[in-house]
Length: 450
Image 1 (cartoon, rainbow, N blue to C red):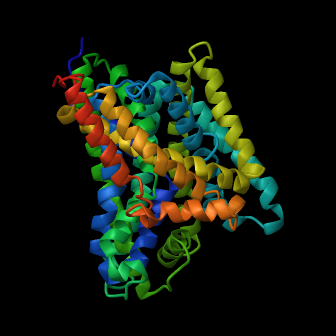
Image 2: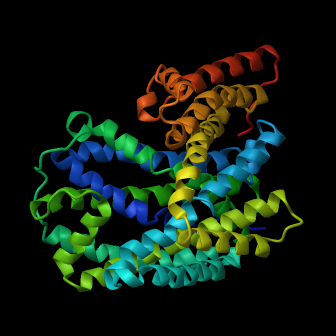
Image 3: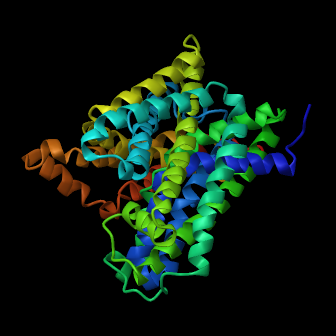
């Protein structure tokens, strides 16, 4: 029996996890942050790194520290029915109903649209999305090979191509870091960066991808749960260090771009302009390759994670059938009604996100608080109410102007930090304290065995 991974194997696992996390959105938003932050870019980056890499690391670490083999296993610490509902909703959101379809449309918009006449965009999108998800499905067929596909092939290619741009931009910068900060980046850049990182939703992905890492470690021959937990945390650390370095460099590129470019409406426009500035028309091709690879590797990871998670809960349905479903549905949604789908999926996303973060934090705090169902249950119960508020607030496109909706939103505004999307924090803390006290009184709190 193999006791632990070698350094080389750890690096490849960490590289795989980085590749799964780093999609087109992670490529775009640091550039936009840099443009908006201007001279405050370093302070904004500090805030970004706290949540942009901190939450994903906690998600992966939480699975490792509790020796949980899956999201379902971790959520089961609350109760079994909740574990089923939470896990299914989580994987539908980051899978076929929300995140995965956007990977095809984002890579198409940034990578293919510049080369296609406007009248041909719809049929070309259909062809592109079929090829994109067929490729994703092909790579996802063998989950044991995902470390090779993503960690050894796609991620290094992605880093080399992106590294070319970053190196050229640092050698020949477009400007300095003296531009005037915009909006909230002028008054509170750290908080603005913090919120930007929070909004990446990578905390949800960390639960799904953490399981892929655990399975990858097992494939390499490590079977001891404690060694798997340690290697999972080490791989997560390698991944977020890579993410942190690239986030910082991309933010600096965005800030320096103001020496030659105007403030754009989004990071995609800025990134395309930067590529064009340095590489001319070839820059469009280079950007297309980088964005498509970035989206493809994340798509492979999400389809794999969906198949493995659903097969664990419903073992009668084979993994191969599940990944076909996880590939076909987003292909359809990417072509017919993605905008409406995202609109209706967002309330579910805003509802699940606070519940996912509290589950992650409880997992990380297990060595100190124990794993009592009272602690997990009361914290989740108190988080549930502001999570419902957040979900309903995201449905304002349906209920805006109605009296009961306005009253509910006024009630939601009474929660501290609700304007930042953090209205769940104080209720969750109250629930945690109550649950811990009850666990001590009932002597149910179990000591965590390190």
